[in-house]
Image (cartoon, rainbow, N blue to C red; front, side, top):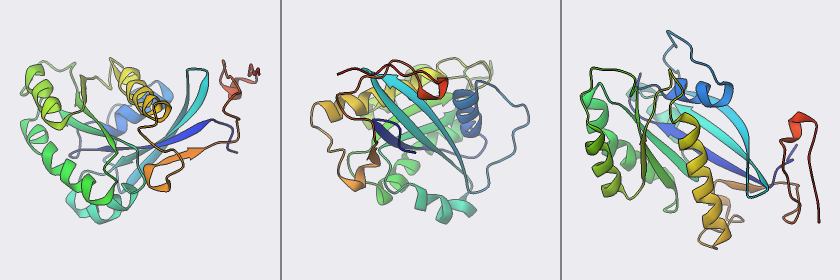
Length: 209
């Protein structure tokens, strides 16, 4: 069922064990699982979100960080409109390799993909990457930045909804053509002039006009 205004395809990339799967689980289900197994290939999650009276469905693909799965995961990069670049603030190497992940994603996506740099595990005290370093890298990449904790939920909802809002505003201002199949956006069955104020799965939807 395409009961939404828009569907956005997002990918989550980064080194193994930086917490990509935990971020996905925290956002989609509001919980943290201790001892989360390393992702093999890809994991999928989705969530609906209302912004500007539009129902937007997020299609979220969590990709494995190991080199051995790279040929599999890169196939899922194609047709994405948003990408979360995730590193672990307690492991310097995961930060240093962010530029490599950007290059990998760029090979298989269009130039209009929006990035969001995420420094995960900010609840840990053994910090190896400062907040300012993350901010400076985001400036170099020309994208948003925030530190998160998949364990406590800090800023997890913020990163997903901030990127969603940015892409929607780009559609609204005609910077992105939602009809271009390469942009990772699908148009749903809800008409553009229909206003939604509650998630349909909650059995109530307010529609006017």
